[in-house]
Length: 329
Image 1 (spheres, rainbow, N blue to C red):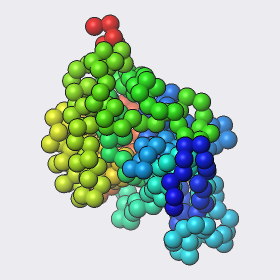
Image 2 (cartoon, rainbow, N blue to C red):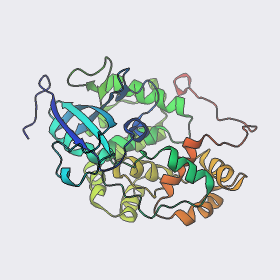
Image 3 (tube, rainbow, N blue to C red):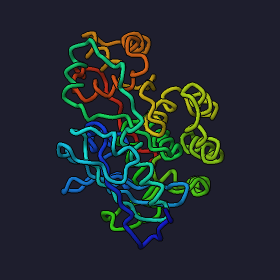
């Protein structure tokens, strides 16, 4: 399919997913706060997402609805295999990378996610699996796009990281192609991240360590994108060979870019306590969390997603991480 110019489009397709897909829930992991310039959900239920694809910038609009019994998939290589009761996906894309983004859309919605073998014994997990049958672990296929916001989230509260992400995309990202909602931007290319001066990082509230980590990643962006073709352990090693990228950041990137259902965010500020409280009734540390997740090897990230969705949390009696503003330093 020919790449489309910025003002042309849309390139569109419709297909039936072979099983239920909750589009908003599955894609929500790519949203970095309510003001994310690269992600928007509109009142009509459409999810809008921008991406810098290998073919250039693109905007994706995607909507899922229950497929009618006996309906056939359209524009899907596996149309004949899709059973009734799946989700009918309608997608449209604009920009030079429109064709690439549409081709990647099934993977983004978890087409390659295989929950076979995930048969949780814990009552909470059984209940949450039944409540959210459309939760999938998707893959964006864009590593640097997943890595930069993960680095911004290192050792700070979400509000602080999301503010920095929003300011940097508005300042350095291009306007989204097509009829995207106002204010949407496209992730800047690696060369742009390398050229951001120190005072712009400071204005965004990002200190030198995280800024240098992003710049180091941008210098080897091509090598990082290669992890899409690697086994999880090799992908983890490639990411963690980069200064400033540890276990937590590697897992966060592989969850979103690679769709790794087993990547655990070890080192998270809240996750061990939440998992311990939900699955054992008491707080645990990282080691205790991994012990509780061990029976679900291959699906440990899936388990942590279900725990997060459950809303089961320990009482917040300890000190909270404070929002810092490096712009005042």
